[in-house]
Length: 256
Ligand code: APR
Image (cartoon, rainbow, N blue to C red; front, side):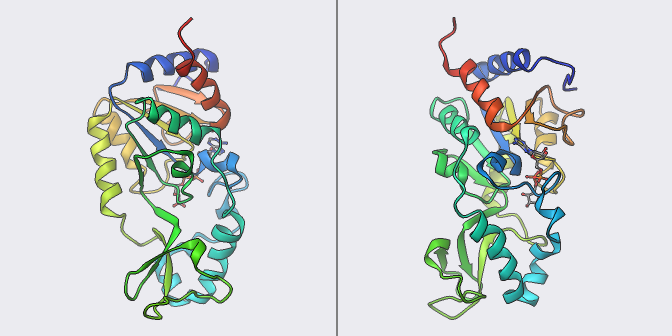
């Protein structure tokens, strides 16, 4: 599949041609697209799961000891990542959407950076950390409006436990992004996959389904992933910000 003995420049040129000719392109992103915004990935070098136990984000663990779970959740997702800003890769995807080159973005990320970069048609497979939801009355709060000085945070309306509105391990994927993702595998002719290992079910099935439907796969990643040798047609090996910067020059500069 993805020719890894290749020149990045040549592959970026090929990818730009594919994207310009595409009728409907879906961007499919993972934690890697936000690494250059200062948010570490989950796996691989410096990954969160090399420092924290993923069981932390298991729903039973959270419900069993919410105060303890919230201590780490606050440290990871609110103290540290709260200030992250979109990087060049998010901005290029938003520009591509504005120019009609991206139909929708399916993201596994919960950092809201696609929306902050200006992307409108974003579907969050794993929810969003910028919203907290009350497990008692289902009222939702903007994360910035709720003090995390006393944990666990509780609902001002009913006193119920507040939970970040992202999908914990053991929870189901919200229906809207699930439908949008499966639909994307049949209405797209190109997928651009950026920054994901392709390890986590069921999100990781989406690109395989797309490939089965004849979708052309462009992948951006500094390392090979579960997709590269199996379904990737054009592998753009490199960091998302750097590669998307180069790709944007091919896409947006007038043909010479
Ligand atoms: N640019 C692009 N990709 C990068 C960069 C970068 N600068 N740095 C790292 N990567 C790549 C890594 O090579 C890896 O393939 O990003 C990927 C990060 O992989 P994961 O941490 O596994 O992230 P992701 O695939 O999104 O994880 C899926 O796992 O824990 C759950 O819910 C969590 O949504 C997450 C899901």
